[in-house]
Image (cartoon, rainbow, N blue to C red):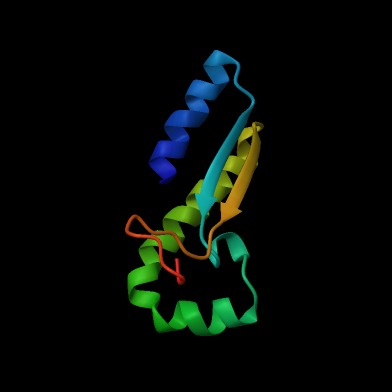
Length: 86
């Protein structure tokens, strides 16, 4: 994710676009409440750590870029059939 954002930010700088919108995770960049940071992330730490570290790098790049940006912290996303849980 951070690599893609780096590429898009360089294109934005050359073509004159002003805004980038990225999907992040609860827990990245210090976001999320106590429950998300202390319970959910700890339960799934082994699987989430590389993802959250990359999202942290992405958020830091956005903050330092000078571009207008928005982050969407989506609690659940799915590529499958719509259900009541996702």
